[in-house]
Structure formats: C-alpha cells, structure tokens
Amino acid sequence: MGQPGRVSVAGFELALDRSYHPGTHTWVLAFGPGRVRVGMDPLGIETSGTLAQLSFVPVGTELTAGLPFGQLEAAKFVGPLVSPVPGPVLAVNEALGRDPGLAERDPYGAGWMIEAGAELPPGLLSGPAEISEWFAAEVADYRANGVIAE
Amino acid sequence: MAAEAGALRVMDFGPSSALRSQTLWHAVAYGVSAGAPATLSFTRPAAPYVCLGYHGALDEVDLDYCRVEGLPVLRRMVGGGTVYLDEDQLFFQISLPVQAVPAARWQALRNLLGPAVTAFRAVGVPAELDADLEICVGDRKVCGHGAGQIDNAVVVCGNLIERFDHERAARVLALAGPAHREQTLHLMRRFVAATPVDAARFQAALVHAYAEALGLRPVPGALSPDEARTVVELDARFTSEAWLAGPVRPQPAAGSERPPRRVKVRAGVWSVASEDEGAPNAAFTSAGPGGL
Image 1 (cartoon, each protein chain N blue to C red):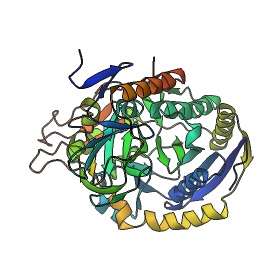
Image 2 (image 1 turned 180 degrees about the horizontal axis):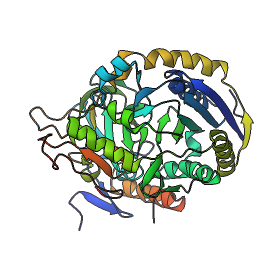
Image 3 (image 1 turned 90 degrees about the vertical axis):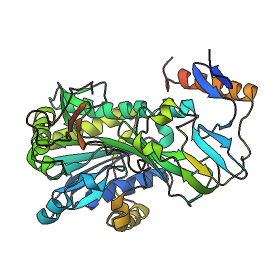
Image 4 (image 1 turned 45 degrees about the horizontal axis):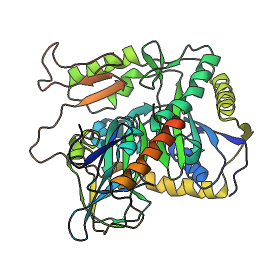
C-alpha cells in the first residue's frame, strides 16, 4: 500500500500534493507565498542512473524556465537539471552535497533540490487524474522506446 | 549553420597543447549543438597535464607538485575523475545532437561506447563493455571515458592508452599520505592497462565503427569560423580561476565528519585512506569490479 497522498502509476510512486512539469520531469511545490520548491520526478531519476554528483547555480541566480539550474552526474555523464520556473534561486539543498542519493531515495522529501522565488507557472500538471494520465503515457512511451526497462 | 544530412564529420586535431586538447573538442560540441553535423574528433596532448572532471574537487590534485613539474591543471565539462594525460594517449570524442541520443543516460553511454569497443576489437584488443560501462580487457580498464551534455549536444570521450605512466598518474593526486599513495599506485597498476596497438589503425577503426553504428557517412571536416571563435572563448574560460574552481556544490553540514579521501581507480575499485593513514596493512579498503 502506498503512502497517503501518493499514487502508484506504472510502478512509480507520485506525490499528489504538488504539480509536475512534463518537459523537464521535475515537480514543483508551492512552498510559501511566491516561493516554490523543485525536485526531480521518478522518471527523471530513473533515466539518469545512480547519482554521483549534483551541483546547482549559486543562490541569487536568476533562473530562466527551460535553462539549467544545475548539473547532475551519473555514470560519468554530466547533464543539465532544467528549471521548470523562472525566478531567483532562494535556497539549494545542501544535504545533497553529502548524499546525492537522497534525491533517489526520498525525491519528494529530503531529496528536494532548489527553492526559487516564483509562482506556479502555467503548463504544470496537477491533480490525481491529470498527473496519472500523463505519467502513465510517459512511462509507456519510454518503455516502448526502450528508454526504461519493462 | 545547416546540418549536412547523413554526414559524420571527422576531424583530427593532431598533437595539441594541453589547453587546446580540451577546448578544441568542447568547441566542436558547441558547434554540433548549433547545428553542425555529428562529429568524431581526435587529439593527442603534445605535453602532459592533469584534467578534472566537471564535478571534481580541486583539492583532489597535488597542485604544488603540478606547479613544480610544470603540469597544467584544467577542468573539462564532462564527467569522470581526475586524470593524467600525456602524449602516449590518443583521445577521441563523438559529439551528437541531443535529440539523436536516447533520453536515458546509461543507454546513451552504452550506445556511444559500443563502437569504441568494436574498434578495439578490430585492432586485436579483446575489449568488452562491462556492466559498469567500463571498456575492459578482463577486469582491467583500457579506456578512460567521460560524457556530458553541452548545450544541445551530447559528447562521449575516450582514449587509446598506448603507454600509461601509472606512477605519474598516481603522483599528481593529492592523497592522504605515502601509504595511500602506494595503495593507489598498486591498484592503478592492477586495474588500468595500456593497449599498445597502432594508433592510426585504431583511429581508422573508430571512424568505421562510429559511422556504421550511427548510419552516417564519414567526411573529413574542419572547424567552422564560429567553432574557431568558440575555441578562443573557451581558452579564456578554461584558464580562468573561476572555471578551475569548479561548480557550486552543496556543502556538507558544518561540523559533519569529512569522509575519508578515496580515489576511484575504475568502476568498483577504490583506494580509501583510513583515519590512521600510517597503520600497517589497515590503511585502505578496496573492492573488485562490480562491488564496493
């Protein structure tokens, strides 16, 4: 049985108290007035491999939606973490420096990545039906294309 | 710049300075990101130097030793550890538009290292890509690799190690003490091997293998004017203190215990300094490939 407020979709657990950005495979959670918290969704994590290193732009950096807020390294592959929101970086999760695996083990809690001064942007997916439908289709597409295992 | 359909641009930069042996292919990646054809490039450092992976910590390098020895220290934009490079290593880089590469990074890496394995085998080296995505002969790594996304291009780099200076590769690292250094050197000798084959044959085999795997036609190429300008820009960036210092990484909490210094020799093999560096036979732990 899954945790309250979560739903299992195609073998992945999704938290329903937040919104998802389909283009970047991140979640976005309103975290106070004009403040959001951002982390990776399970498909973003699954397709990265075991996280070895994470780095983020400095606090105060003005983010542009669609551009990197940091870099992720797994299996010697460095790739961008793409921001779903515009706005200044207000905080980064320092705990990930000690233990990048937190983002895999607890992606919705201790594995959050950054906080930004932003409102929830348009284009996010919210609510059980919308989230589940989108995520199931994504997983099916990834599996059909061999991006993730059956 | 319009991409030439079906072309695999092949560029051999030949012997290059330490700096240019990095900035040339990074500029190519930016070029591919901007629309240049997929490119296989080659370079050989004209002189030795040390190179950190994108996330590598500068304090992993014995900077005093490098200064005395005149070894430049650079940072690349792709992953992997701190490495020693010299004229006995031929480096190759395959750069592709990001949309031509699987979204799963491990799969992209496996797909793009496969042709390198094919090339090794074509020149008589019985290489295999193991479960850790290391190119190996038996349990010995024979090719150092790194990968990354640079703007909208994906680059995978590797090398042919004709001879490997294990002593110097260990010496450039900042280690916990003599025992840690000795163990690191021991593990490097045990798990990193050279494959002294004819470099020109290997290079030709790589061109063939990548062209075939990607379904592209190899075409000799050269830097575009934009790429040449990017080289100059990257020369400045890569020699700046800010770039060498590396990206901002989240820091461990104040007062938390610093983990022991450890060096990844190959996937699954680490030399690890103990708290009591001098303790005989107890200074290090290591594990074989596939384990920790």
